[in-house]
Length: 386
Image (cartoon, rainbow, N blue to C red; front, side):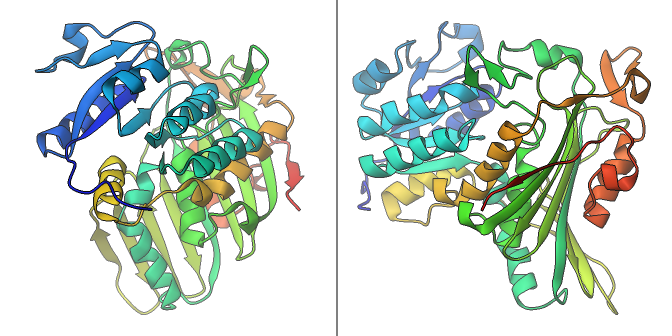
């Protein structure tokens, strides 16, 4: 596509400035200080107060997203709103020629994802999907090591995420922890939202990012919390290249950094994707610890529009992830864990699943599902994508 030329700073509208949107607000401030963007507008149902915003020059605020894009002359819209609103808001921006940074997950179903991606493409605008971990320079570095045969043949890829969320986490918004709401898909589960990066990063390291790269998906969806959706789950994805198992929980005993683990015939690589930290372990060599920089996705979008830099996370490169979302959507509702499988942690008001940290790590290490590791409460489900 043609670039916008020397038009910096680009006017940006942020839709959804509370919750995770606060991170985007601060990132826009950082890029504004660099002269790359200008915060032109904020779309919220209730305007931000001056105390919430703390901005030298207050941007225009409105609950009408389309009108705000028109009045501000926005070049980019950052969408960080509830999952079911993503597609319609993205298409509203695309119809006005506004480019997009769309938070993950891009949509709650594969059909909605295709409606968004096809509509954006037809409008001729650019869309970056907000998987920040895919901006890590560690991802191409590991892919290069794999291609060079540093680990021998890749046996499979595992990923583990043991996080903790208290019960208030599920009361932060009406859609939190829901599979559906008012007849619309939400699919706010551990693998599709808070630890979605583990799934997307594992697929990227496998080189299987397109929808057509996925052949088979097995899911085990469970919940300890009193919610509709899953908080303790695992998924095994069979791709044209091999197997990927991702295990995750929001009910960890001792929360830790999530990671992706590449298993090779003669070594393995661990990526702690939030830290851009890598451990390379190869037969006959000492361990190598490496740290990498990261390219911010909004900054990359600006550079793509003004200088033609390669866009890092296109909609099509998240097609495989959306196949996983679809498999989770189509799976039976998550199984409620028996009362003796978890406890409410005193003082923290959060539920902890007994032994889950070890199960999550073992799944990533062996590529096995919870049921195959002996968890009596796990029930496997399968969705064939072909």
